[in-house]
Image (cartoon, rainbow, N blue to C red; front, side, top):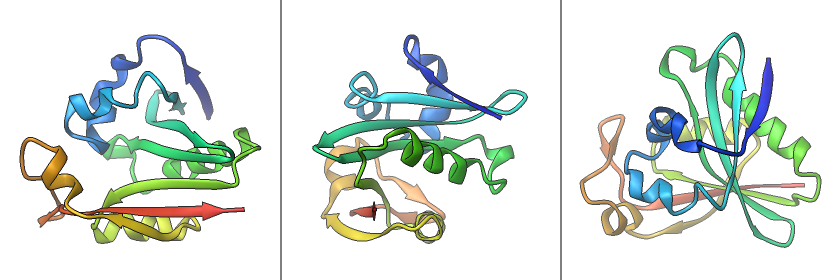
Length: 146
């Protein structure tokens, strides 16, 4: 398994990016200012995009594993990589919808709820967003501190 940084042509991975954030213009808001990494394990299995939000504070803006490779530990590996690679990171934030499986995944990776942004998905997306049959309304922010 190899995790490598993508410096150019980040949109080549748009199909993966759209798994975690289904509106391209929202991805455009962070893609170029963020660091992108892909996980290659006999083919690209997943990706993540990290942004620096302040001194010692980073945000996981996008993390996605291709559907046929989910639940095999690749997402956890990407999070572990971020925490190892960004040694100055004292707080890692991630925003997600109020979806049981996503919240469970992040909690299993050591994240706890930080705060919520009310009506984020309603106010910022051009269509209703659903995950696991639940309409996403608020953005739930979780954090991992060290």
